[in-house]
Image (cartoon, rainbow, N blue to C red; front, side, top):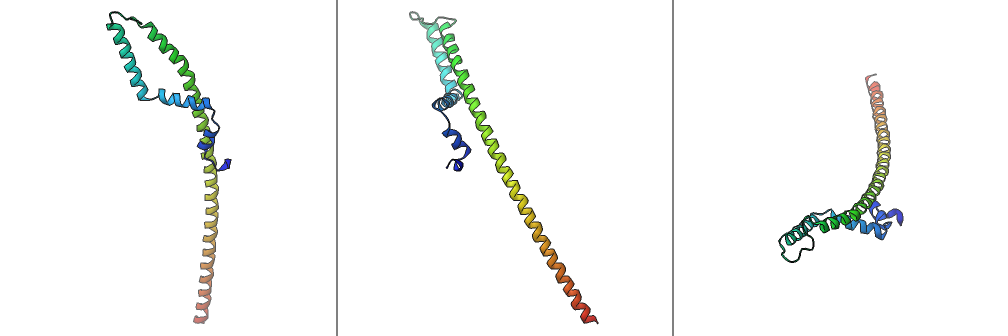
Length: 143
């Protein structure tokens, strides 16, 4: 049953919960949606802290916001690297599978070429035999 699976199915079945989580986090953080939402949060954060008269939880230069981004980066970078490593592993498996498929295709093409050459030789031998028979028949007629 394992051999009937595609490389992608084999890879997905071998992934742990952490692998899937790293992929999901990377997919989210690598999207325009995430960038737009994060930009909106930054603008709201800065806007509230610059204009608020009473509640400045993070006054300019936004040290708390900087801390939040530092924590986000500290976790995001290794998660993204895990996902990249898994992508590299997937690419290696796929490349190996493609290579094996190409080798099999090459072998089949070579077998077809040998078969076609054999058929061509047989046809040429048949044509030569037919021409020799025609020559023999003509030589009897001209005598």
